[in-house]
Image 1 (spheres, rainbow, N blue to C red):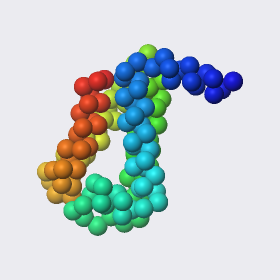
Image 2 (cartoon, rainbow, N blue to C red):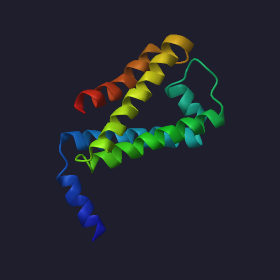
Image 3 (cartoon, rainbow, N blue to C red):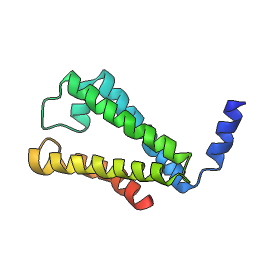
Image 4 (cartoon, helix red, strand yellow):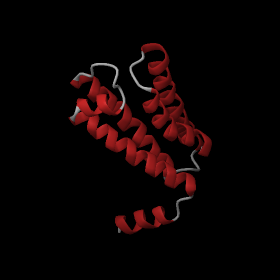
Length: 126
């Protein structure tokens, strides 16, 4: 019964809900790499610095939290506080990466652009 309900909810999602599901899935993959392969975090985002296993797991936890917000919001678009929290997670995450690029030089412009694709579209669509 639970699977049938989930399928009906997925079928009824508006465009914003689908976008949040896609972004949540991408974030889930990145969280996985943070937990199990810090080298992937370094290669994917923080190419200008050394990434320890602890740092990779910290990035994984933060990304898992934002992934959870995306999924929860996708299925509860009528919940304004949840939508606001999800929107702020996009703002905070992209702000963090802008600071990493401008101040600390730990990510490349290409990484910032790729991350901006998801954060920027998330802000516009929201």
